Length: 458
Image (cartoon, one colour):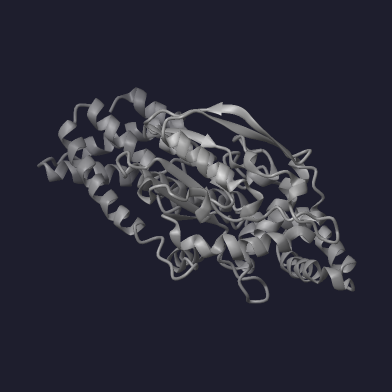
């Protein structure tokens, strides 16, 4: 090893942690890199530990130039660097064995992934269990443990750990899609309101693009019927949560035309006026392109009726939080999504959070009828919940829920809003509020709701 490299390492800030593929937050160790290289060398008859350590130091210098404690590398990214350095430094035989070992481990992981969508009826038990184990391993399975970690100054670490687990899910879905050897013509990202579909779609497109897949997004939001065509209740609130709020026959027709190589004219929906203009934006895809659809009702049968199921890969995302509140009961997934939608709609759609609360019964009814029954048709399930969102919501929304609880306490027409406000208020009061949101990465899908995302999500 040259003195220049030693000096370079002395000047390079050291990493303290990396992320495993399953989202586990683990300490960084150069020794693990050295051991992996040495094992590969031994497999072909080599026994030079000093050379393994020298190569590990070189690899570490490259890692530290490209990553930091704020943006740590994944194990897979480190392995990519190991392969590259081994080949460039003239150790092709060692690199070959390292690559073969890595491929074997990947095969084992894929076998595990194929079981991760096991569910009975519309409940993904296997996925829920995996999320629960992850939460327990990270001391994030109860409000008390979350508060303890925040008190220890771990909020930034919680953000990194949670986002790594979510990224693993997205990468796993991309890997399964890419393994279909070009047979996939449509990728659907579906899930209930405010589960994180938009950012997940952007991230999935990025991963698939790196694998050489051409993706063209079909924006289903432009297929809403005019708002005045939706049912309206006694309060003047429109029910636009059902699949029938969308022009499903036109969506289905346009998808079939795109797959046949024809040009279509996409309508344009104006959310500010609640009106749609037909035949506005031309769209056509190449034979090798894949249609990417982000839709609340992406699993609903009529949208893709008559299209070969073997050409469709369906991703389902839900806030599968596994955390017990102060009352000993698991926090409801729907309450997370309610709060997300309140903040997003207030910031980006000029929609009062109170309106979101009073409208939520429409959201839940539509989910129970038209979304949840189709979970068992999904090819892969992503957990869109992040434990750190609750302390953030406690800071942003607790006072609102206190106010709404009192406002609707004696209103017989707003029983649903009252009970929901009371439950969420009690839950948020148990969390230590977090006011500094800067540790939340710009790449986090949670920023789709609170703002500051690097993705075009609105």
